Amino acid sequence: MILKFCYLILGNDRAIFTGHMIIQQDILSTLSPYYDIMMYVDCAGDDAVAQELESYLKSHGFSAKADKSIIMVNENDIEHILVSFLKETNRLDHKIRKIDSENLLLSKEVPLEDFGFFRCEMCGYAVSSQEELLVHRRAHGIQLL
Image: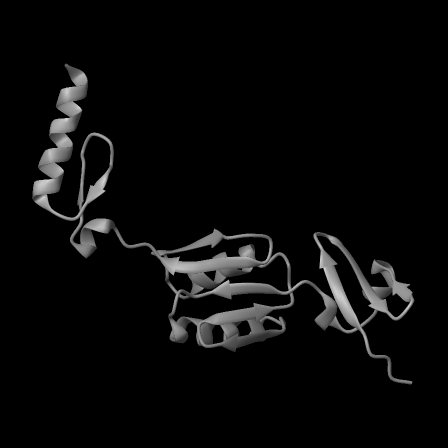
């Protein structure tokens, strides 16, 4: 018998609605792993890292699929695995940021100065030209008077 259904995820409380019948979470865990919460890892446009991460996850027994630079994983606690991936592949300049409960960002941090911006030494404010920085610095002096 084939049942058609849709599922609804509300935070950590999960249930599948099949017509008038509700299958609770304990029964849900015996079904296919595709009903687990999916985690999405965005590799910030780096398709090569995404492909390498997909292979790494599969070799460690995880169900993962890459779609360009985004990895979909059937594992809700993936951060420690990403840390291991970064260490094993010598990507120590990459950082992992949790965007929300289902999305992580795996990216390389680049200082603003590398893009031609200038930063105020007093407060960290970033501007696009030396002239703007000079005006901004003067504002600090006016506030001190």
